Length: 541
Ligand code: SF4
Image (cartoon, rainbow, N blue to C red):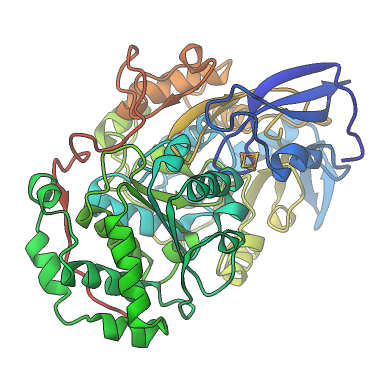
């Protein structure tokens, strides 16, 4: 960025450009960000910072940042004061209480802001139509694919343990590009002798390392994974002790693969059967081994099945509950994990729905229904579905036809252009809060610079609209108070508070105020399940 200069002061915080959460010192001068420097003692990044972390902050100084609230008059935006804009937002939403509203939020805002968005939707607007707008399609794969099998939906180990794996299987994802520090850890591990399998229809930066290449046809991941599972069974490479002690339903799983041969997998994927068998052999005999996959798999129509096979490949080979073992979901959005953790409705939620209903004074949360033909008012927090949704045209149509749309964002996005009220928000280094990294590490992000003009943090805006709608339970002076409420409602976050997050953060599950956090998931049992559950699998094109 051209404003790069010597800072007047530096603040220790966390990069939120991707889900790794590297430690960074942002520098400010005159209330503006002017520099970024690596944090040598950060427990994940240990002094590393990729190009996005080093220079991505420049976007906060962009001249097009929203600086004042905007309201639409005669089809044109005019600047407004906060009082007028908040009054309009509250008045508009008041007309659609009880089910006519939809709330969309971005997984790039803080945990506290996501929590308030959920609470506002259910307790104030009375709607269950609330969703993480950017990673909606990945969630089904994660929630159903992983949740039904192992009872959780998160990376099994800390990023720093990646180098301890003896084998890495990377399928249809490019860690170096989506999560650069994870790419670095894989490289380090392979340079020390770990095996690498890459299943992708393209070359990726990691392809420069020695590896077994499975050049599958696009969108044939499910067949490849089923073929590998079958090859492991054929060669009896599965971990019988682990399967007996820690899992159920293996026989049904085994039977379901009876008709799906390695040759069939080879025919569908275009990968020779010998290569599929070799990859299966290397994955199953590398102890411990890790699986890396991304939304590219999770978003397929067969995404849930593919994720379920991945979870079961790890189960078959005993790759759970040990340092360096399990899987690494590489979902791009920075606070995707926090958004998933805080969701109150999915079956593998970290929260008791009844407890939340009681605390919020609302009905027991139901999963989001179809908003079709019902959405009258839209409240969109930091998300840009008109640009990013898979079905962007229908989102644009729905927003264009909706009687009332409020968008809060840092820029006048394509979505914001369709709103009646636009509220300017503080960016990631202009507010306080927490983010949950891909490896479950909850860390504080801190205010380093001033938001431009009249921009305000998302949490403040949600609370101000709630006050104007005479809602109770939104009187917070600082995000730390919101985290106190989160920890009282979400058992996995129960031991987390701002004073305990300094200096290194805490990795959930952290069930009480003395608990040091948990590095390795599923060491003794699978959440809510006790034993992991194998599921029968079937090939679907
Ligand atoms: Fe930021 Fe991710 Fe790069 Fe780390 S790896 S510096 S968190 S973008």
